[in-house]
Image (cartoon, rainbow, N blue to C red; front, top):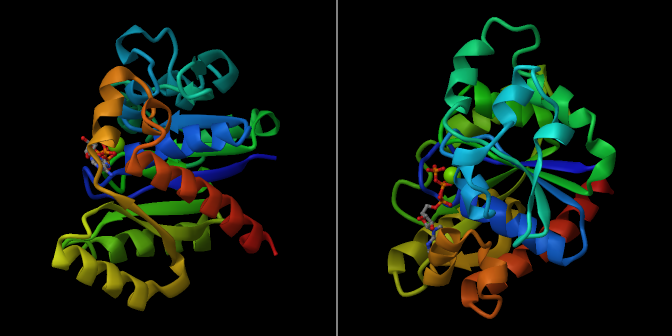
Length: 258
Ligand code: ATP
Ligand code: MG
């Protein structure tokens, strides 16, 4: 049975895709069987895993609409050593086309149930919106990882996300929990980064992952080569932090299960 996690934050550009791709590759390095689900029409996770989103014969779009299944549509990230259910801009259409379908918020959950036994982890990269696509991600997952930048407006919007997660867990998916908040693009030289980081710890205590992901140019360069940062330059500070985060995740899941 795979553990399924959603990486979500409706704010754009906060490090969701970087986190999903590097966690996938980090877990693969620990010999875990991983499926990365790209739930964003931007297809950034697909490209970051080294798969050309312009040349897909099947994608998550067909899977959500019941025209294909995960086993047929999935591709291999050779650089990251994990499977990918890829996405491209076609997926934007699914948002509209799914509205009239039965069980429209559980389409992804139903599709993933069929491959559950093939993986240890399924990681879902959500789009920057609290949309029907994100709802499908939340309904399919056991937990949510929320990447956050330690900046002035970081907390704004967090309550909307937390409320959505609460509603989903009350009405649609009782399994759903917030696994933790991950501080990303952290710059220790900035007093503000440190202050917001401290505030997060005060407000959310144990829900804040101990691992801090620093701002690191190697993480930003890696996607243009189609290689996850943790593989592209394993010695870089960013890669080391994501490896540590993978280990912390595994530990945290063990505790959640107790
Ligand atoms: P979107 O909301 O558009 O899906 P996102 O939340 O998935 O964005 P990313 O695409 O992961 O965010 O990151 C936004 C930008 O910041 C990218 O150019 C990425 O390479 C860069 N980036 C992410 N994390 C880091 C980091 N730790 N250090 C340096 N650059 C980073
Ligand atoms: Mg993204």
